[in-house]
Length: 420
Image (cartoon, rainbow, N blue to C red):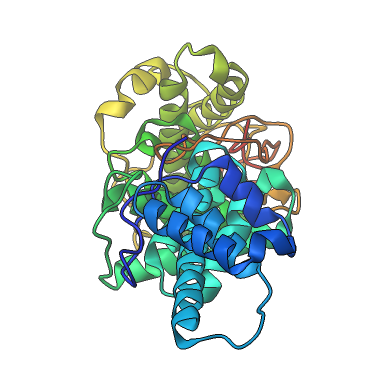
């Protein structure tokens, strides 16, 4: 049992390192009146003397003594000296319990994965300290782990914490210590990841920006195949789905025009980004058995989109996978306003994965029959279960003859995320 040290040197501040089981149990129990024999003036003097002896060397024991002293009913007129003792002990108990909340909060969040309990405690701390950036960051960086709890309200609160924390960091606020996240960059990466994964269903275009940002820093997210599976899914359900629907409405079955060609060129830019992201997911999955199911889905999507952009062939795809990680992740494409000198032909209609994600009602994680998993959590935390995604949409095809494509871009569901 660790001892709490450097605490309350007569009306000073608190620095608690651990909380023993006995103290936790005591907090959880209702206060009961101490038997009269334990509350005689002599017994109370003994309790206070014990408290003074232990308050800097065994604070859990000192806390027990203080609680026992304060539980004694008042008898007769309280002297000024007695009132000072009572006020001091109340102050000690309040600070001890406040510090205990913070200890349990981080222990439950980062070590024991007791997420519901940790978030309830974090919410309580923020009610008293709304500007506590450390707690906001702790809650926000772990928010992507909440969907498996199937508590939509809690997941929404987690998203809110992530957004508040990221806004504070963007505004220039900082922490003296980032443990256990290692650095500001790690915090920013995981905050963006939480926001991206939890908003993917409702706002895939916005989520895409957060997900790309999350992959910019040297964290486990940059090396996780799931980060890139999410990015591919965000492209599919966001800008690709939107532009594909426009193409269908404006050009399906009509004569080919420069405008229809330009829109298709912009669609192809998005498909190229999807190919890049799926290739990264497949490359990072490698031969690791824990990614086997997810990798199958990603590889199917990669093959379909790659064949669409390369004359229904897979020549060069293995080379793409082998070399893609040596290249920086491309940003979102800038919309073309004029046709490039040459546009690679696309043939066939992949029965692939593009369009609008479905949800399980818990934080916007796509659901379906595809496979992917949550990325590694912040240092000290562990992943838990969540949603999944897959789909069977169809891609835009290159116009044939003098007509725009007779097979319009369709939407389905992305093979992006499944927590495990």
